[in-house]
Image: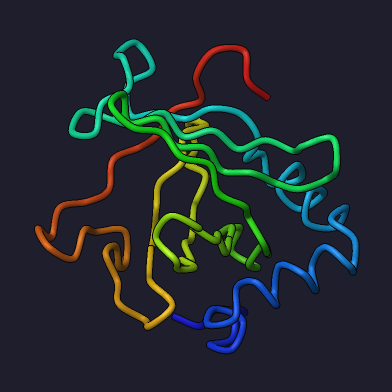
Length: 154
């Protein structure tokens, strides 16, 4: 699997975020809009957000143009900045997210399914440690679940 984000980009999140901001956030925002990422997603939108049964994941564009990734686990929430995004020829969206509370940047790939849901194809740390690889959780080997758009999000 070849990804467009270099190791240097992943190990220098603050520098990379500054470069993205200075270059203008509009191309990043345009990429996530074009792909259809904006809005809230969950494994089951009818359930309250829960760490084990499905978090509510929201992608939004702030008035200043930054793309934010909010996670609601029910008992905990956080907000993180998407610092880069690209669409692969096969339609996969690769995004790079800086998590201040974790002091790390993670890269993940998402694929839209025919029914409009999305699935995580990979998720890896800045050191290259995968939690999801080839659409499966590394720890269990189980396929990642489909996430559905919740509410009136666009």
